[in-house]
Length: 368
Image 1 (cartoon, helix red, strand yellow):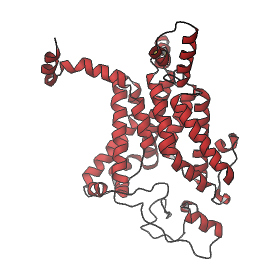
Image 2 (cartoon, rainbow, N blue to C red; image 1 turned 180 degrees about the vertical axis):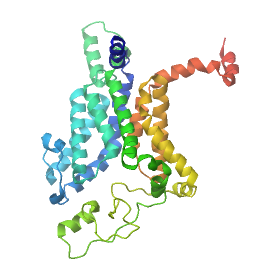
Image 3 (spheres, rainbow, N blue to C red; image 1 turned 180 degrees about the horizontal axis):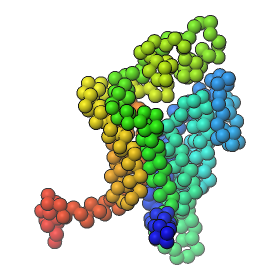
Image 4 (tube, rainbow, N blue to C red; image 1 turned 90 degrees about the vertical axis):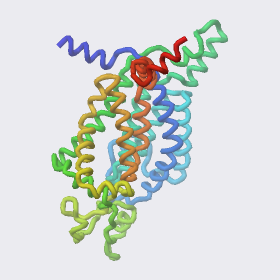
């Protein structure tokens, strides 16, 4: 029992450099502000125009003191506020409050877009990471806040070098570990979901083959012209899973015996995907590999090398989804790349390269 508690303490509270948290804050906030936010604000605007008859308000919308839907005059102000908060968090000016408010804003955006049954999977992971950064020790490293504090103290007397102040002291690593646990939990839950809903049959390749052959790109005929106006509005907005027809064609009724326009699961296969789908054995191999990869996510918590290999493997996994089904997990790729301890990896490669047979001549030539 004592050894288990000691191991748990080491896992959460060992001292480490805050470089991973600082890199994650800078890159993720900059990426979210420049690449994610313009699109998400547009989706927030369109979400506010959908019929409220089908709204299923989430606890997040009820908890945050932000009205929904936002009145049109407030949308622009909310957008400018989010852009400003994202930039402040990225450069590290008023870092903690900027991170906290930026995270809250993104939780609001995600909850608003999801209020009709559409889950913003691609935004869930970065929104949670932003909240962790807002409270984790070391997230303010390499920030304008520390630069200003260093300049102020320098005027009052001798201070440590600027680089040392910007990097900051070593901190308990629970912030970094919490991000890794979050990544592992999300990936593991995807694998467990496949087992829960499909069992081992998910590995037979039929489900993945359905996506790779374009099975979710069909469009159900619209509802009758005499249907309720709210229903037709929801249909046009893409939320036909709420009002699908009762007489769907057999080819369309592929899920639970009820035909829907597959908004939640839509994939647009590429030429590569269709080429893969022609080889049944390859689809089976990819199905088994995807499930095993997701179920093995906890290995990234076992040490530096498993962490590095799994996170880089996850980047390849998400790129494979993008290049075959055009489903983007770009924000997840950013989080995984930031979670790699690149300084540690470079040190390991530098110390290990001279032992590799192909690198020995180069190492000897570099010696004086």
